[in-house]
Length: 225
Length: 200
Image 1 (cartoon, rainbow over the protein chains, first blue to last red):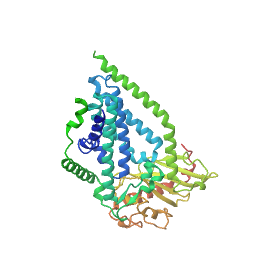
Image 2: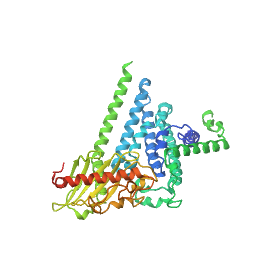
Image 3: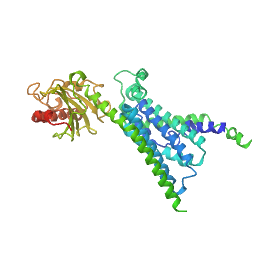
Image 4: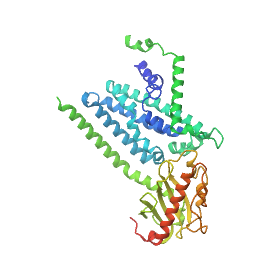
C-alpha cells in the first residue's frame, strides 16, 4: 500500500502529469496562465474539484450502472464546480471577479472526467482520493509554473495581485524582477501560452529521458511478497 | 433490469439538486452583500463616503443613453436630499476587442469628477493603459465637462480633438472619449430628471 501511494503521487506529479504528459485540460490551462496568481487560483479550485469528484465517484462506483456512468460523472462534476463557484463568490469575491469565467471552465477540464472514468470508478476510496490530490497538484503546479513564466517575461513581475487570493499579507510576495517598463506582449497573449507550454513539455521530456523510470520491480515487491 | 440505470441517474440528479439548493441558500445573502460592497467600493473611488448621507447603492436608476450599450446604471449621491453627484456605470461597444465598462462621476452641474475603467479586454501593454494603475491617461477627464474647457472638441487628438490619444491605441482612446461624451450629452438634456426620478 505504501509503495502504491507513492506510485500514485509520482504518476500525478511527474510521470503521468495531466498538463505535461496527458495534455488534458488545455482549455483552462492556456486561458488563465497569464499570471502566477491566476494559475494558483485555478489550480487550487481544480485540486478541490478533482479530489472531491474522485471521492464521490469512487464511493458511488458500485451504485452507478455502467450504461449511465458518463452522464452521472458529468452531473457530479458540474455540481461540484457550481458549489466551488458559489463558495468563491461568497468568501473570495475579489478573486472570483478575476477568475470568474474560468471557474465554470473547470467543467470542461477533461482531466477530471478522465480520472473519474479511468481511475476513481475502478478503485477504492482512499486510492481514488490520493489519485485526485496527486493529479490535481500536478496540474496546479503546471498552471503556476506556466503563469509565473509568462508573468515574468510579459510583465516583469512575479506574484502580482497575490493579495486578491491570499489576503493582505501577501502583498509582500509581489516582486519586480525586470525594470518597470518591461513588457513582452507575446508572452501574455494566447500564442505565449502555447509556446510556454511547448517549452515546458520539452523540458519535461528531456528530464524524463535523462532519468529513466525506476525499475517496476521495486513497486511490485509488496504485491508479489 | 433496464430500469435500474434510469433510477440511478435520477437519484443522483435529485441529490445533486438538493445539495446545490442548500449551498445556494447558504451563500446567497453573503454573495449579495459582497456584490453591494464591491459596487460601493468602486463608487467611493469617485465620491468620498463623508460627502453624502443616502443609501448610495440602492438609490439607482437605469437609463437608455444614445451611443452606449443599454442599460446604463446611474447612482445618485445626496446630502440632506440635495444632489451631490451622479455616478454612471456605462458600457461602450466600440472598444478594440470587446466592450469597455466605465464609471463616470458627474457633479450636478455636469462637471466630471473622474472616470474609472471597470472592465475591458483591450490589448495588454497598449489599450490597457486606460486603467489608472497603468497610466494617468484617464485623469485627463477630471474637471472637464460639456463646455469645459469652453468649446472643447470631444475627440482624440489623433482625430483633431482636444483629448490625448494613447499611442498605438487610437480606437481604445476614442471609444472611451466618445462614451464619456455620450453620457455628458444625455445628462445635459436630462439633468433634472436624472435626480428626480424615483429609485428602482
